[in-house]
Image 1 (cartoon, rainbow, N blue to C red):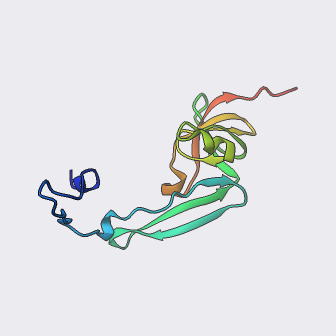
Image 2 (cartoon, rainbow, N blue to C red; image 1 turned 90 degrees about the horizontal axis):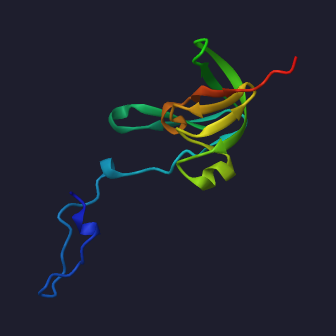
Length: 133
């Protein structure tokens, strides 16, 4: 483990200070999560290592939902976030992450993409809404 110095005491048995063997590196840097919400579409482009880029979805009101029974994918409006296993607070704040259950115009769907990494909201239909005829 390269970061053992985070867990142990900073003092030796002799009382001297244990100095860090390596300094902080840019490659170890983290960023704040995107915390994608429901709203008018908003994207953020981020430069990553090697000059590559990531697109983060900050807000979006539509999702690409695949109906596995028919094999068709449709763009539908998101109405609410019902459940988020990543964090219970995220469901209350209506934050979309991979694995969360959203309510759409055609029914409940589970998100299969990572909106903060992939730049799109994709999901699969779990439960269809009953159409009143």
